[in-house]
Picture 1: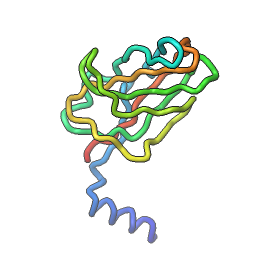
Picture 2: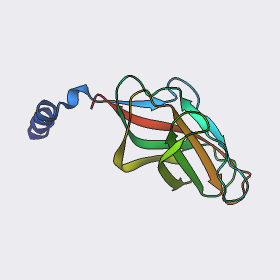
Picture 3: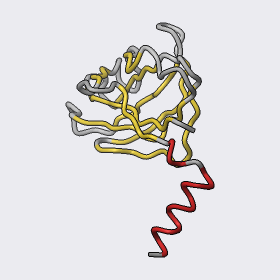
Picture 4: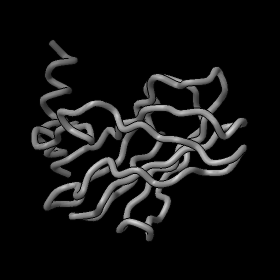
Length: 134
């Protein structure tokens, strides 16, 4: 009973009943990223044309289907095509990686990702996990 009471008090005082977790791209397969030459980032690939009408918080990254058994680095960025700015860079091989601290992404931002690996020949697939309603 006490854990339920604490959870409800948190919802009331933090306004957390409005929070939602969403993934981008939504309702679609993961976005495939291709590296450049060894240890060089490949081209940015769009995850979403817009994160929505309100600010959101990037809280994690899903990665799947790496084509090689090597570690990958993935950049998550915002901005127009050719003008992206990295907001998060993570190093991992597969699975879900929660970010220790969520990163605010401004409303209407275009969301993109790119990757690199030791060979430059690897591909991987990613989605971004976001929090809305903050």
